[in-house]
Length: 350
Ligand SMILES: [Zn+2]
Image (cartoon, rainbow, N blue to C red):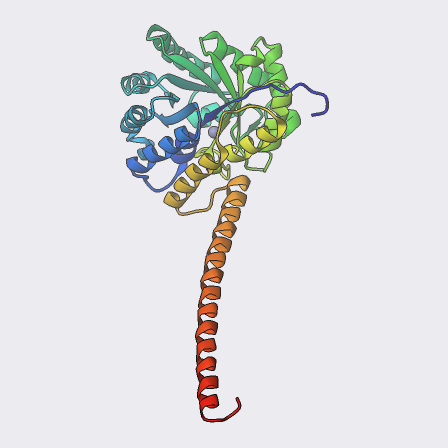
């Protein structure tokens, strides 16, 4: 790729069960959420953000966070399970339910912070410092998110230095990894690359950066490539492109995991995910939600499967028809023979 050395291997953090499902208007049964996570684990996803421990009063969809995490972990112990924990109470619930790691977030935009969590960036960071300290004490890893790292729905483009400042603050409070989020999905590749470079310049090693890219303007995959070319090797993604943002009107889901996996395979970058099994997982959740997956690769593969299935049936049907025709012809032959014999017997030439 243009002579740029790409990371040999990428870690995908599957955020569909949290970032995706939290935005669904209808309440999804716990069984469906758990089954979705099981299928994702079966597809080889090694890091799954399973849910968010917010107050059920604010997000009723996530009232079953404890049960989802507990059951998923018991049924598929292999992946590393993360949960979003906006406060100390959420952190305690997440740890009690068995979260392997927790995630906290700060916004790079002052306007977004005030509108979204009702406080300034610095106030929000102070609040998360509490969670980070509790996590350190409990030996639970903490991941940080920088939301609106390139664009804010209220104040427009976000300077890379603003994203870098929050990334550095999250690192300093003990986050092992910081995920730069294009929350609104309006960023373009040069902006994403600039946010990564500014964060590295601010002292956040690229090995500790991740990218979280929504696809609202169709830029997510291009933005992922831009981050990859800057050396980022951890990507958040959501199966079937699930998701949106309740505070960011019109925002669509994260980069679809299938599309990211397909691109990485094509680039020769290892990712450890079985694409066909992943398409099964997104087909399952899409059926449960009653709509098509937003992933191009999932739709293409579903189309190919349907075509293969139809041609298989046509082939079977064709064979059956040919067999019937042969039988008919054979029967017709017998009849003709009998007619010939009859005619011969009566001295009539057929
Ligand atoms: Zn997101």
